[in-house]
Amino acid sequence: MEKDLDVVAVGHALVDLRFTVDRFASPDEEADIVEQSTGPGGSAINVAIVTSKLGGRAAVITKIGLDEFGRQIVEELVRSKIDISGLKVGFSSTGFSVLMIDKEGNIVLYGYKGCAEKLEPDELDEKVIARGKYIHIASLRPDTSLRAAVRAKELDAMVSWDPGRRLSMAGLKALRGLIKFVDIVELNSRECANLTGLKDPAACASEVQRVGPSTVIVKMGARGLYALSDDFTGYMPAFKVSDVRDSTGSGDAFAAALLLKLSKGEKLKEALIYAQAVAALKVTLLGAHALPSTDEIEKFYQEHRKEVEAGISEKPPQSGSS
Image (tube, rainbow, N blue to C red; front, side):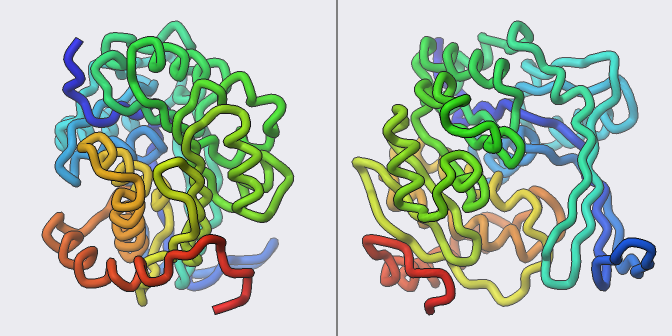
């Protein structure tokens, strides 16, 4: 079958209820809401929409309910020209997240997974998986994640996996059966520690790679990332931005940009630099998949990429060092 999709995103479909607050309230306290907005989110939705915004072709495999939130998600996917042939509809409610975002862009999140977490392994649309160059699996229950990874490999696709906070807590031993079918593992610092018990990004990446993935990426937010791969190994600093509004979905934006570039034949190092630029711009805007125009992204990328390249080194700097 023709590989006509750059990225197939398998994961959660939710609606984000976002509240920008002047500060986080302590128990029995009240804080003012400065701004409120609502929009589709969740790992699968974010990755697919960002892929499309960057000029790629994407599909989602996820599950929603037959309700108002589900309708909003479908409308946004259609508007964003996402292939929804792998979308399933269940009898329970569509999931949602309540996000409190302070003035520094820090987030407190309360989530109800709803239908998204009830996507069964036998509900995965293998025809959609077969069309994907990269299958990105994120924050999804282990049995469905495993089936998606196994079938993707059997159907000659590359597999990218982001465990998310909860699944990473199961630990490396419990997830070995899944990870051995993955080509690219994407973790943030907390997930790295949860998964391996190691805080050092290089040591964590090495431990995960032993299970089988060819590439392991540990994202450290504003500090940058560490990557371990035959194609590129080392620390790469982040792009600097002055205004951080909302970090929701920044990891998904990174994944979408990375996989899109790789699907077009870019080398890992170049794809990582571009993905960091996209993720940096994402945090300057409110919304899980909000981005500037592709022209603005390209301008920012070209203007600042040399600063990032100049900061590439063998290992990450110690926390607190400049």
